[in-house]
Length: 274
Image 1 (tube, helix red, strand yellow):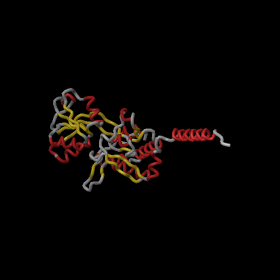
Image 2: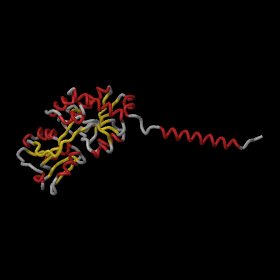
Image 3: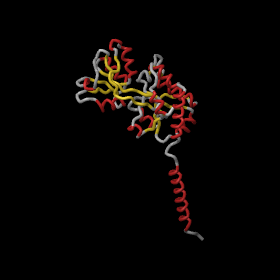
Image 4: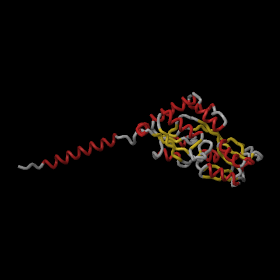
């Protein structure tokens, strides 16, 4: 004798199985915890812009060098991971973190409210001034003096954003993709002024000492942090602890002094709680 309910039982079983599957998907994390992934691979991927000396550049042997590179090397060593440097540029620094092409970004990344909407930052590990530089013999006392003249800046950078806020109408802001091309523009006379960090005037003077570029106007002083994907609380806590410890023991200041011939601003340690 045949019983008809069997198909109904099979259907009920399939529905129950599907419900369980959907429940498991709903409870699954959106992505693996970053610190777990790094620990499993043994590799810490840090993106750095190699076109921003003395923060980061390629040396004569095409190896990465600079203050940001040494910060990354020390961080990876202290956390017990192998360092993988992922070259980036100002436009891709944050997208690389968001798309998991890199775990962290150490690339003169100023902490701003706009950026904090899309990524997290470590406590500040360094600071950077936004200045307008010019030849020593060129008078420049206020923003009005830039009207009718060309100022080079890296497109989309914090320098660009801060300069745009205060620049006077009639000033010609010439935007470039990275510091290397901006420096080339200043060297070739495409722009008379350069909105950047004080340290980035050094490469200009090294190549053309007669220009004697120097800071003329301070637009703003920003604190810089290590960029981290949102909600990676364990990784952020490890990085924050590392930053505070190395501000206290002087290692981060020693790296900065080696490459910039100056000490970190006291504002850095104060803001970091170190």
